[in-house]
Picture (spheres, rainbow, N blue to C red):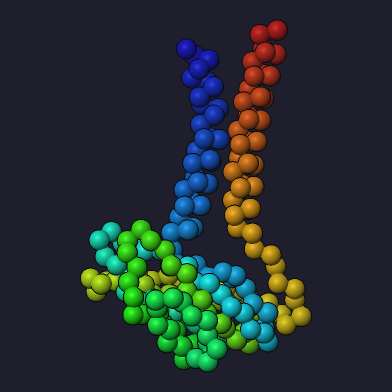
Length: 187
């Protein structure tokens, strides 16, 4: 019984780390995000704004974005988001005319002109709901120098790599624990 307690005590940090990683991954998905989260200054980029409706019992009826300095959305040549009406004027963007039920997610397409200085900036996003409430988010966005190659974003692969890495760490801890136990028994 005493050995089981020790084993559990050694596995607890690994289990806590694994649970924290899974919780953070779920929390990261649980808000408005912009993908790709970068643009080279002097160029144009089409982004996808992912907006999940996390409010129980209230459909989302509008999404508003205030773009950071250095990004503009011109009203002409904007991609369509089926079922939603886009209103774009410089640094202010909104979609309305539809509703998104609870526990559903929608992607809103937006073409941006990037002219800002390199660095990290933030969008101001506001989800509005049929009950009159709203939720605000500030997704980060990176402005790259004009000659930069855009970095690759493979968030799904990164999450899989993180989970596999945690599994390897957990298995390594178990293996080390068994080796220690067998070496103590031989003495």
